[in-house]
Amino acid sequence: MDNLDLSVLRTAAGWRAESRGVVLGTITRTWGSAPRPVGSLVAVRDDGLIAGSVSGGCIEDDLVAQLRAGSLAIDKPTPLRYGVGAEEARRFGLPCGGTLELMLEPLGPQSGIDELLARLTRGERVRRTLDLASGAVTLADAESGADMLRLSDTQLISHHGPQWRLLVIGAGQMTDYLAQMALALGYGVTVCDPRAEYADGFALEGVTLTRDMPDDVVMAFKPDGATAIVALTHDPKLDDLALMEALRGAAFYVGAIGSRVNQAKRRARLAEHFGLTDEQLDRLHGPVGLDIGARTPPEIALSILAEMTAVRYRAAGARAEPGCAV
Image 1 (cartoon, one colour):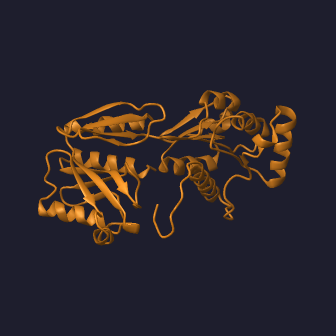
Image 2: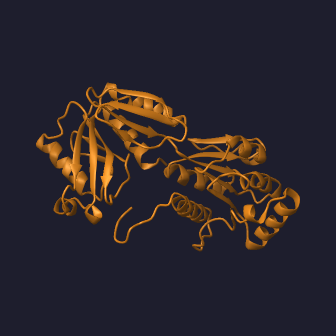
Image 3: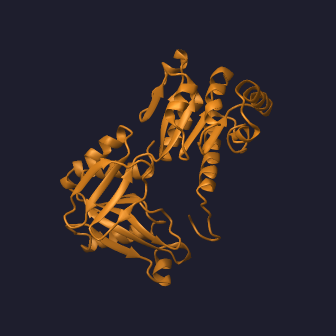
C-alpha cells in the first residue's frame, strides 16, 4: 500500500513511460479551509485521466475541462488559483470559502520523477527543487526535520518521503497489517524482532527489519516528536526492554498490546525494575489503540493507527473548525 501522493508519482511515472503527456499539480498555498493540505499532488494525463486529489472532485473536473479545451498545453510551471471569491469557492467545492493555489508542471525528462521514486523506494527523504523558469528539477537529501513546502518567485521546493516514523516491536501477523496501513499514512516503518521464528518469515516491501534487541534499537532510533513506538510481542522480556527506553524519550506516541490487567503488571515492573516515574508511565497507551471493539488483527491495527493519528494531531495543535474539512 502506498500513501496517496507516492501513488500519484508512481502513476505519473507509468504514464510517462507510455509516452503520454502528464501535468503534475502541487498545492502550494491555501487560504481559509481547504480539502487537502499544502504539498498534495494530482496528475492529469493527456486524455483526461486523473490520479490523486486536491479537492472533493470539482477542481479535478475543471482541470480535465481545461485540458480538453487546450488550456493545460503548458511548457513550463504555471500557477493556477481556485476560490478567489465566495461564489467560485462554492463552485469548486471548497469549504468555508477556502482558496487554494496549484503549481501545474508539465512532466518531462527534466522532472526527475524516476530518480525521485527510486530514492523514495529506498526509504529516503528527498528535497525536490523545481526551477519555475525552465521546469528543471534538482534532487538532494532533505534537511533534518524539514517538511514545509517553500514557494518563491523562482523556485518551488518540496520534501518527499516519510516525515513520521513508526517502530514496531514484534514481527507477528498484526504487525503486517499495522505496517502496511502505516505506510499508506506516510510513516517510515521499522520492525524489530530478535526472534528468528518471527523475523525469518517477515518481509514487507518498504519496511525495514532489524533483529537487534529492542532497547538497543530504540536508543539507536533516537525517538523524537515525529516518532511512534508500539510493542506487540506479548513477551515482557522484549516489550519491556523497548518501553523502558521509549517512555524516557520524546516519542509522541508509545503503546503496548495487552489487557488492562497485564498493563497494570507492566507498569509495576517498569517502575520497580527500571525506575520509571509515574509521569513517564502515564505516557504509555495501553491497552493500545482506540476502544472501537476491535477483535481481529486488522481491526486492532486500525484502532492503533486511529489513536496514533488523534494523538499526533493533538500534539501538533491541529483543530477542525465547525463545518470545515481539514
